[in-house]
Amino acid sequence: MPFSRIALHQGKSAEYLQTLSDSLHQALVDTFNVPPADKFQAIDQYRPGELIYDRDYLGGPRSADYVLFYITIGRPRDTATKQRFYQRLAALLEENLQLRPEDVMIVITTTQLDEWSFSAGRASMIETQP
Image (cartoon, rainbow, N blue to C red):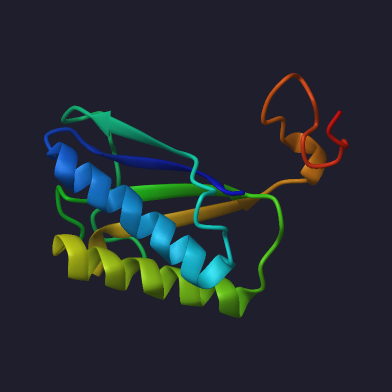
């Protein structure tokens, strides 16, 4: 049950955003064993000057097509699994959107199960359903 935020510059088409979203979800399904219907994402689009990043730090060179993925997960994955995910997502984005792998940054954060409430004010991952 990951929750993902996708940050990029404004100006991409609705089709581009849908493909970006679908590619992320496919990579999560393929490598993190996320159920196909378990899709929770927010896309944040920024005007020029509002998405600030070093064009060369630990990679690059990055272009104006830079995309940042923040992914919050509840169950930890080992390093090899995360590496497969990084590679799968970059490959899907390059294939589906011609997005250069140098323009893809990913940050994964792990949380505890009691830090999720999906509805009704319940700690959904640890409380039994009524």
